[in-house]
Image 1 (spheres, rainbow, N blue to C red):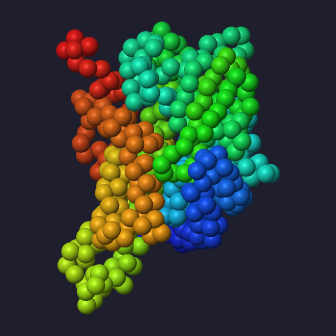
Image 2 (image 1 turned 135 degrees about the vertical axis):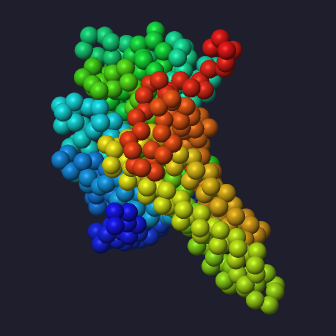
Image 3 (image 1 turned 90 degrees about the vertical axis):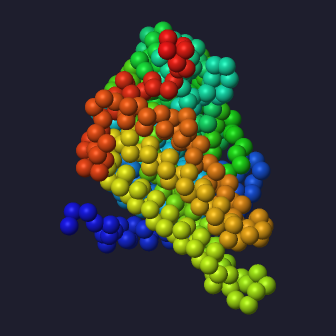
Length: 441
């Protein structure tokens, strides 16, 4: 039978090993790191756990084996990610961002660039190596990133400008929400940065991706304090005449930085979806255990009552459905050269929004006691609230990508069912980016 939802023996071992890491190494770190008000100190508290993740192969599991990485399939990554996210999705986000920072090198880098950046990422003797993904920009007028591909010249769209000066690019501008300022606010070891290399052309034509290395002069970082995902670090990055070697520009991404953004956020779609599943799983497990022991002053545990049993039954079904959607999406990535611009967005939107509501359903079962922080439901809700709005926001980018694909005259609505490759092109990007009256409509 070609369709098989049974994990292999190797995948079961992977799940078991990562679950043991999450429960025995990560879990003891979570309460203090999550409660730490200073985001830089909180992130620092995760360092030893991260080093263990690096040494065990988890941190660089997505990098191909020929460059020293784990070479895991996307299905394997999703299986492993759920186990970490059930304990803390913020920590998992740090690992995911290694992929968001380095997979563009895998996909768009020359062989020389791959040899220069990837083995260094997978062979750090300290186990502290971090990579970053630097695309989002601060809000303002103009500002923000949702309409990064609007077909208008500067200042619309991405605002960080990279001007060629001899053997270097000079970068100026600001980013907000990139994945990490590094352990010491001096940057990650490398970061794939989306820049505008041709400010006179529209967003779908003038963007590129360049690798910025740690402690590059002219780049400064600040930590962002967040309501959730506090074990992950996010940064404000300022580029002030920062000089980056021209040979750090990813050769396959020159003029195609927009496609890098869409491909990266499609690749991470099932990981974001399974992160939501992991958090909902933790909430479900807690709510079910509560319902089997708590009587609410009645004669028997509340699991014996229709309302509780039905709600938790629905919760369990939702979690199973979203888990398998993530598996399907990961399989699609594995089958189509890490392209899943349509199904990756669909998976991310559907799972993250349904799982947020699912966490709240669990809180309704537990009742007012779920508002007591000692029961962790407030943490589950804080974490779940992030999923629909991060990683290419559902309203800002993900739904627009779906809209662009399905509006194409050539779109086959049965393509995903038939495992058919759905190509994503520049012509699909600009939909929804401009009001009709500005387009002459």
